[in-house]
Image (cartoon, rainbow, N blue to C red):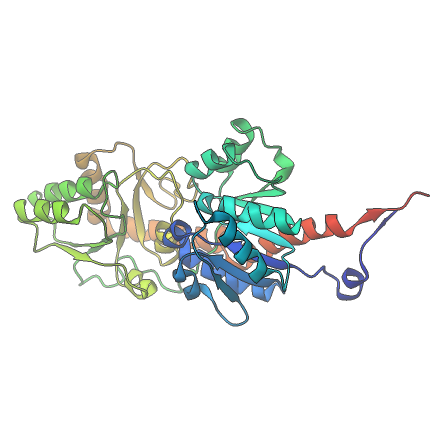
Length: 372
């Protein structure tokens, strides 16, 4: 026979005190999804605290969500700072500790071990999979992945049992209107949010823009980002005389408004980590051009995006040109992408599934057997 606590019987669900460990990388890559998740978990009656050594986490705090900003834990003061963090959390011990990417696994493991509580690892990149392979902390109760492709990596390469893996798709807002070519009189607008770093493909995109200008296409490209290669990229723009059609801008908070006033989103590199920009663009009704991704299954060629198979400037230019020439078909693609988001990437579903993971772990701890 199986029995659960009186609290669960009276309230219908077990109380969950969740600590979400957020590192800067996770915040930068999918901070908007985390904001939606925080709100959704509060609606699911989860007592939530957001923990980070980066003050940026405070931007995710809404309503009753508490933020805990701690000092960076590392040698030679790791032990002392860990003890201080545990003392801060001790007034309301966590039921579950959820690390949102690989950079948070170690601190999450220390918290879970100290409070003898359940541990959840979110897997959002191939680098996270490597971090799991090297993790030496307590047993991880559940692995939450954003796509079936990442689940396959965990099962086949890391030999993690299927019953410890939950696929929970990230949730984003879906706009009521289609942004792509909404104003037929406006010059087409392209957006790219890739960082200005080596390997990000922004240099490839600039070369592709050069091809398109030589073919006499009229458009504006906005590069929203920052990074160590910015001066190099600006020099490329100047040398190719593209200043009239390419604009640099730093990332801003009002992303939804930007997406609603643009037409085509371009990701010029292969994704080995999930970022929410492409999904946000789909939700806004933009057309998406991207290179193939081994982990982002929301990019479906001809259904939600156009996938450029070769990581070269001219094929990328040809792919963008295809969308610029066929505005009706491109707008249809953007509509299909927005509907895909509405069906498969709802915020409510993300929050419900995450809360369900927490409660099942809590229930397993609160359940015990009586011998007859």
